Length: 63
Image (cartoon, rainbow, N blue to C red; front, side, top):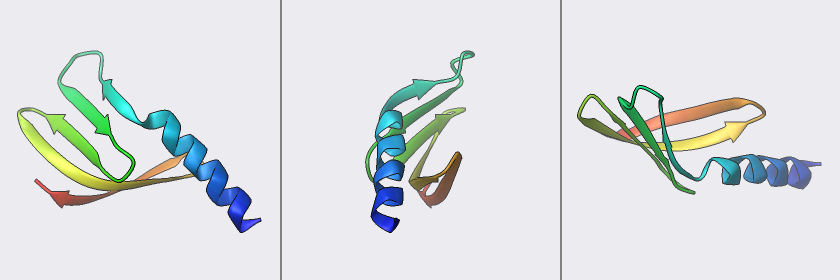
């Protein structure tokens, strides 16, 4: 069961890998396997991220 759960989590994570932006163009998200870079209002934030069920968890590493 644990391996199945991790596998499912990895599949959800793989779907987010890539560049995303909000319609107004003010926010951009660059998802990588081990990090997430958020660009907003001229600032960049580097985060570790994980996904569980339908929730996205972020931990800011560097601003």
